[in-house]
Image (tube, rainbow, N blue to C red):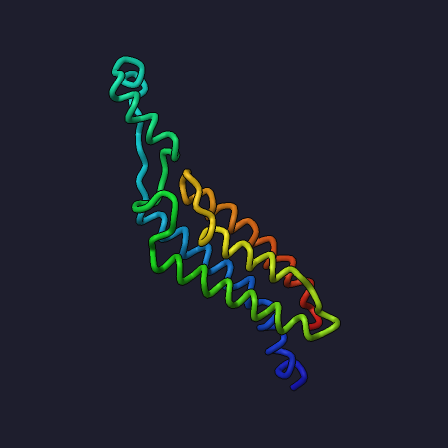
Length: 151
C-alpha cells in the first residue's frame, strides 16, 4: 500500500523527462518526414557560375532543412509540443519550489530549452535552434530527476 501512495511522486519526478523524450522523438519523426536535403554537384559548382551562386545561397542555411520558413517554426505540431513542454516545465518548477527538499532551478533549464526554438529567429536554419533547445531540455530533464527525488 505504501508503494501505491508514493506513485504520484514518482510520476511528478519523471513526467518532465518522459515528456521531453517523447517530444524529441516526435520532433525527429516530423523532421524525417518534412525535410529537404540538397545534393551538390561539386564538379558543376566549380565550372558553372550561376550554379555556384545558387548553391552558395543554399549552403548559407545548410544542406538539410525543414520545409517551410527557414528562420521560424511554422508547424503547429512542433509549436504545440514546445509550448506544452514549456508550460509543463513551469508547472513542475512551481510545484517543486514550494517544497524545501526539492527547491531546484532545473525545470527552468527545460523551460528555456523549450523556448529557444520558439523565440530565436536567426538567419540560419531552424534545425540549429531545435538542436540547441533539445540539448538544454534533455540536460535539464535528466538533472531534474535527481533533484526532485523527494518531490
